[in-house]
Image (cartoon, rainbow, N blue to C red; front, side, top):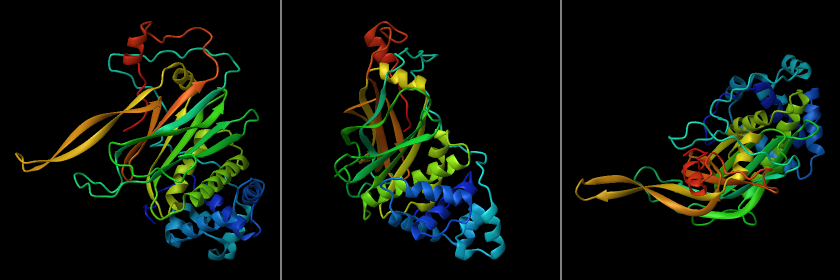
Length: 376
């Protein structure tokens, strides 16, 4: 596996998800009610493939028994690896949502210029206003394989997965997965300091009834199959959603997003390189504020190393690259390479009252109070 194992915040639930995928892939009988609920949900979910579940379980089984047992307890083992007493325990075990460890998953907040003390209050929109979060493109600050001043790697072929989670009117998690660029497997020939606009595509749509959690995963196509990766993402998201619903805490978008990020560390080995994953929790207030603000072109950093004859060494120089990609916020991906994925928010109706933010001067409002949400 490409990534070292990491401790998970809810080993019972995530282990039960993996065990349920095993039962689903082999059409075997689950051993407890939690596994039954997850398997039943997978059977009734369109576009869910047993072959994808088989691949995930094979990768998970690739970790040693000791490693899985240490991280997940008996929930990280499959039936043929367990003793009779442990199987009996698991058949009666109840999965509870344990304390969520969300370190490294910051909520979305506004970051303003230093001379702005308080962020502006969001405008009020009509109650039936529909909001849309759109993926608008990506920016490459440093391609994968480049390290420091050694920049001899080939151009990247990145692709992006977005997973948006919110609570529907029945109090259940509603999940939407989208894959970018739309219409093709990956972007081609991307180098440091370059960007790709769109294709612009909606990744979430709805009214402002609660938080929207957004997981964004950037990958670099190498030897893997992006279509197989997409099948696996759908499968894992559906299984985690079903597990949370069974445990009685289905209406927590941030929980499913955080659990997905943790589980991917254990099962992600698609033959492609992971550029990185990021998570943001967007509140109704932030979405309203974004929708009322103009989406300005993204200004990206480019760390350019050049050899100095005078210094007889490489000298790092930071350049700023103005793109043509409209954005309100970004996610940052730096596990391998450095990329920003860009997003904007739109509303199908204007605010109830014409809104100019904290400054009635249009030019000053755009320049001084431009949101700088995102990392990197």
